Length: 406
Image 1 (cartoon, rainbow, N blue to C red):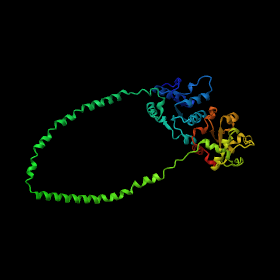
Image 2 (image 1 turned 180 degrees about the horizontal axis):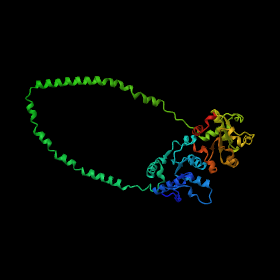
Image 3 (image 1 turned 180 degrees about the vertical axis):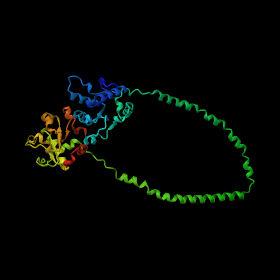
Image 4 (image 1 turned 90 degrees about the vertical axis):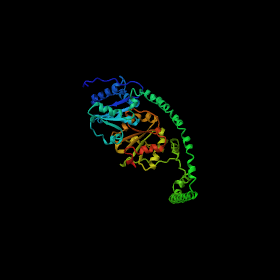
């Protein structure tokens, strides 16, 4: 393949496709992979498919959201690109099936390694030929959804095998005829019936002695068997027979999970502890919300305070107005804005300034709403995607740096 490879037409349609995420410094390697995947019959989209006149961020985000599989071509250049990491974060937040293809031997940063080590990965630089790489690529779990010819599978051979089965059984039907030929056998036995008459000449005393010996031997064998079996019969009631009634007396208790409507209904009687002092340097959470979502925010803050977390939140005096954007990293360890339509209207323009590249930010969505693609790529927890509050808070507790605030 020549080094002057021309850009290939990306897929356009509604079927599931592979989204190729790569650094433009590795464009030549990416185009070679795209060309091979297209020849193999896979539907592939990469950023050569951006329509002229559209916003680059929005178009990329739309194709990540619509893809059937997300493939990241990992290299040193990829890890140094904020755009590439935003694409990977968005695919992770949307639970897209992902595959990491290592173009070179690189070590992921600690944070990425913690999140991505469980993903499927192929170290392409270890394969001496493209055929070896493609053979491994075809084994990727779930990638077949992006294959053009996945529905064309040979079925007629299986039907022929199934139809031939009854014919073989039909050939074996004459077997009973052989049994009918053997019917005269009993006639021979009838001819030999006189044999017992000769036995009648034997003395009856011998017969009685033999019968008595047999009965004594049978009784001895039965007594031996009864001795061997008797302990087993005694052990039988000690086994599982006593357990079933115990299980029936104490059936398992089915726990009724609290739902969101019941959880937020308790916000009327909630009493919050004072907001965490901004002058204190201990790790703490900062939960930001607007007045329209005050009831839900109170319930969430009260729950975290009951669990022992240090929480700061806006007060009536306007906690946010007193904060310098440059000092955000010093004030809060984790920034947790409660995102809603009302929040976007009031604070949407300030979010870029409130977010910090140093401090960890995690957006909590109270309802279905959309932010700008770059902000949507941030870590987020969507309340409406969790059926029960307990599952949501367990996910929040496992978020990076949240444990430090307890």
